[in-house]
Length: 167
Image (tube, rainbow, N blue to C red; front, side):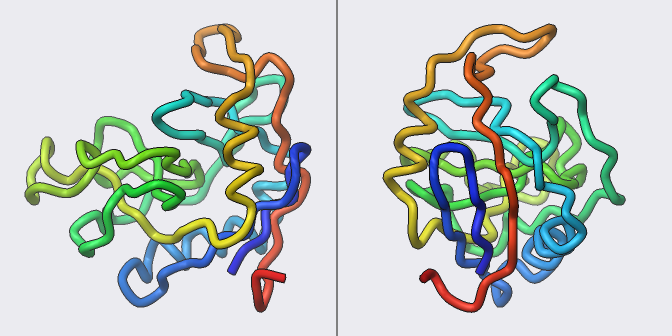
């Protein structure tokens, strides 16, 4: 489990190391290296998802490790409060950025091993802090540089730590 200590409260995520071993290990690697500390939720769309893990409050993108293989074919679905890997148009381009679904996003689920079908790999779920996720999704957003849906008041992941339980 991972606790995200954010400027709006704590979120505890349970990783699914059985069904998404590479994504979970990748996420833990970023957590344990301190990569997420001081990053923000830089893309917030109420009724869709909240995305973070890659930008500092001034919208500078942090350097990442190598991309990982997409595990979206693991049977996990993009349901409310699940956590999935963000990526570019390349299905196998996920690095540090992740998102928390705030509703059932079936259109993000794996449909086939082709560029259109890979979609987005779920690797965990929020087990504590649903109210915090709901506060973040309701944040007022605007444009920052070339980015839309950026919270006007930065929502900072102050610290991300591996924890033994949701307490």
